[in-house]
Image 1 (tube, rainbow, N blue to C red):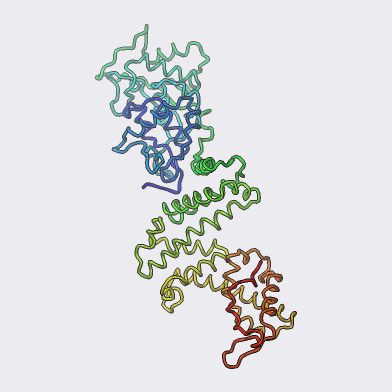
Image 2 (cartoon, rainbow, N blue to C red):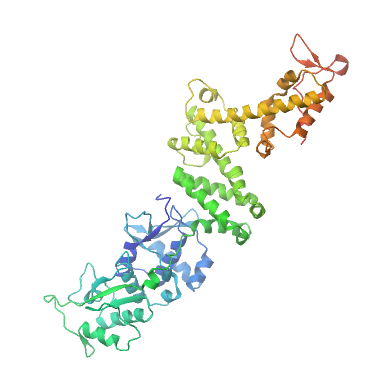
Amino acid sequence: MNHSIHNPKLNRTIIKDFSRNKLKLSKTAISLLFQLASFIDRDGRIHLDKEYVRQQMFCDRRSLESALVELCQTTYNNKALLSFENGYYVSSFHLFTKGEETYLKHLQCFNSLDFLNLTKNQVRLFLNIATLNIRNQYTKVAVENLYKNHLHDEKLGMHVYDDYKSMTEDLFHLIDKEMILVRLPDKFEPIDKNNPSYKKEFHAVCGYVNNKKNRTSKYLKNKHVIGLKVNPSLFEKDTVKNIASETEIRLLADRYHMYHEDMKPETFNYFTGKKKKLMELFGLTGLEIYRSSLKKYFKEKNENILYYDLLGKAENHFTDFYLLEEMKKVILAAIETELGNTKAISTTGYSFTKVHIPSLVEYFITNSSEEHKVLIDQDIQKIKHVDVIMSDVSSKEPWTSLQTSIDVVYSKHTQALKSSFNIECMKLGLNYSDELFAQLKPREVIGILAKEAVLTKQTQLDIESNKLKRIVRFFRKKQMPFIMSPHTNTITMPATAGAKPMGIYDDNSWLDY
């Protein structure tokens, strides 16, 4: 599938061929093509709000559906202008370019009421003029190339008008509507529509006398040249922006009955910026994982997203609980692939290739919280023979970096946990704090704290003291007085109290937060 990180542009060649009658389309279909251009995503998918487009075109639903069918059935260079794939319309009437290919600026007037009210031939004439020059400078055009006659150039001319009179009627209409500027030979200023004799002067220059055009001959080079361009007041306005990414979010919000109108503009910018970055890193696969995460986010959180947005947390919830979680699935699958399961990545539903994995792991390391790193470690440890690539002396990138980032988190919180644990033991007069801490199994405690999203909520490196107090008091209540067994090297309670080795309690009541 064709895709790009750049926004799609109008294909100048397609529009030019329509204007010259080399591409057969109805007036409604060509108007619809301009309306749809704003909603083409970076993979050609069109995020279409039919009711909005119908209202912009001032047409009924039947006309809109008919025009959609026409675009689907019309081919250009052996490819349909529009197709319907997996529940979405997909465009092939656009192109992706950074400037190496010429595209047509999406002028606001293409979506205007004046444009919609033009006749089909007037639309063709206006678009022919719009495609003459990239920068909208005057282009010299032989009048004889605008209608059928002996001097008409088959390659460059329009194949629309049968005679001079019908062509000039439409040309004058575009002048009167201030949509184009026309310059006569030896004239510096364009024709002034307020000049009551401008039509007569135009006819005189072009050899149209007594309602009759001078006879033309293919053996005579009596062509009459005029200058044409779009009125700068139309051309120099801001172009119509591509709003596919924003519309994708709004349509998801509508699906789950949310008022997307209440979302902050910067939240839309965050999502669309995240989407572009993922495509820069991973191409079409980046777009896949963005869309999958976004759909899941709206489906599961729907109205809560507006609440998160009020708190300025909508984007963080999306990244932390959806996007990074999807990435974690791919990373775990990539580890299994390294261990011989060649189908692991395909089961995730994404088309990540081996070349993407180092960048994906790097993205995860950079953007994930301490909780994410601890939790992915817990999932990694469930994979058989994972030590071969994660901790073996022969391990290599990107797994070495991932393991290092995980180890840093454990080391940091183990030290903080031990320091605070010792302080609480001293306050309660408990001896053997080192032995007690060893029995605590700090990695397991840190894992539980990660599941509770405690680690990165702290402004200090240590865990909240009240939580540690509950742990220590639990030990004191269950295990005092403590006795160190010289044979088993475990701390036990006297037999009369029902001695039981520490660390085997499984009710987790000491972590009752």
